[in-house]
Amino acid sequence: MTAKILDGNVLSTRLREALRIRTSELTVQGCQPGLAVILVGSDPASQVYVRNKIKACETVGLLSEKYEYPADTRPEVVFHRIAALNNDPSIHGILVQLPLPPQFDADAVLAAISPEKDVDGFHAENVGALMQGQPHFIPCTPYGVMQMLKSENVNLRGAEAVIVGRSNIVGKPMAMLLLGASATVTVCHSQTRDLALHTRRADVLVAAVGRAKMITGDMIKPGATVIDVGINRQADGKLCGDVDFETAKEVAGLITPVPGGVGPMTITMLLTNAIEAAERTIGK
Image (cartoon, rainbow, N blue to C red; front, side):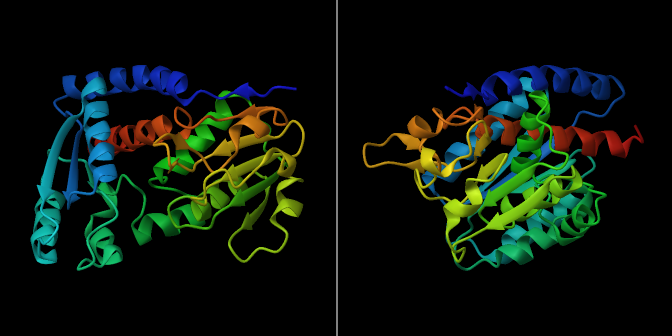
């Protein structure tokens, strides 16, 4: 058996066509959706991510503003910028690119963003709403994963879902979304005993731990849906996920590649959240 590839690029292209229409409708009503991105420091990966996000904004007609600061910037400078953006009616979404330099308290920075403009879904108020099953903004990567599962009509009701990784950005919100879809959810992490025991019973396996190729084909249930959130750079410079794609594709029923899987969907759902934020401002 060779798994069907769940192509995030193809799905993203289709979804962005619909987003472009929504943006056009808002613009006609005098409300062009706007996203502000704050980047502190010169981390190469962060610069690439920000560049890709801004380019994606342009493809669907979003106004984008980038505020770039050197790594030694004092935190109060960034807090002042966030406060100004919170009060700017032309900006509907605010994103602070992580990680931040060590002089910053990342939690405090994220808490400073207005919950109504927190398109990353990281503010405590939005996290709490997700926990209650009434999300205001869904974190972009888990949101993208759910859209991928929906696109393939993966039946989550009663399914065994196993998540490897418990981060606030992916693992925990992913668990809440899968629970909300009536899956039976197990969250594994660095202290889990016999990881393969859990992964082998997963109908849906989400790998989001940041360790290259740690999930191998012999750890996967035949026919399972495997979602690889990880992105790791190998010694030869090539990118790979947390799943050993070559062995996993011979066992899984559905699998996402790296690159070209979850990554494009994460950016697409960021655009979705920003457009939804704009729609809320005009009561749509």
